[in-house]
Image: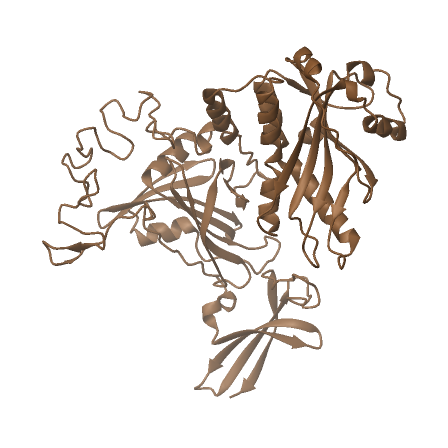
Length: 535
């Protein structure tokens, strides 16, 4: 809502009517308005041209142009920030308030050489900056009159104008959207070049870039219970948010057929959490058939023979477990009602990320959660130490554990634990392919994409065996006269029979509706009947 208030959109659609593009250079107005002070921004779609192939339906061109024009405003907040750095306040525009200066953005010409789709080859945008202080105070209150007055803004009040042509290399929609968002930076540079707004130095640009990257991530859950969810490039672990996250691998399975099961591998350019792996098994609490045999905590303790240090914060178990001299780190949350486990989550991270999350889990400060926050050892993603303000800590070592003399912090030698020096040379003489001429064998080379920990998979199992995929010899969907059913077949060769287990949704409806587009197999199911057949 904030952005919509800053830039108002008023459209007068005069289809396929050309408008003149008078090139004005009002030097006197420019000099008189070196310091704008404030500006309101509107997008006004008046008369414009569309050039297209004769076979194309005109309405398709209009629709494509409208869509592309609307994409200009996806990064409005950055545009407003740039004005603020130039000491210009951006005001909300309406017809009741007096506005000193008005920036008007209008389409001029849309060109397509596409034979059928009318996708854009180029888009010409006109930008006008008017001194509107004496004009806006007398504007009428009727929408029709208001829009007409925007159209008829007098040329002698024009401070600055620029016609911007955006050319597209291909017809890919995402590519074209990105190109359209180049408009605002071009406008800002033009205003700076002509002295209309203050130029921003490199340090201010760098500072602004970092501030934009530090936008807070709001991960307040919909309920008070812990959940894991992701959207675009944001990962939420309960209240904790991680930005610029990348999903590397997604594994879904049907280990427990009446629950959602999966494992996701994430990576992020973050000095405190390079890799995050999440696992989950989630069923409908209202479905009485949902009940897992063990929590992830119980499975982990069993795997590590109880050799784990367990701490709890806000119903989250933090487990530090050791086996064969190797320590792994987990966060776990499972939900129970009357000994029925219906929802379970597991998070695997490395030591640094584990400590960072544990130390900040109840903190209201969100800065550390972005890629540019500091971890518990004082490092940020740029490799700058919080305490020394340099790329070296108080002991003289950088984030990767090297000092200026090339000595490794952990081995106290010129080689790290994998045998590599600061310059990438290996103690065993490993070449680029990993071959060691000294050892006469291939040595595994450490790569930047290597995980910072070993992923351990814990398989969920239902208490009732008929809800475990592994119980069946065959598993499929069957169309019956009553709709679709999920069928699990179990063979008993010695008895000479096959048992077929029929499953429906917990509300008694079919498990999937093929007539409905995008319909998916439901895991909110229950047993309907068992049918025996002879082999």
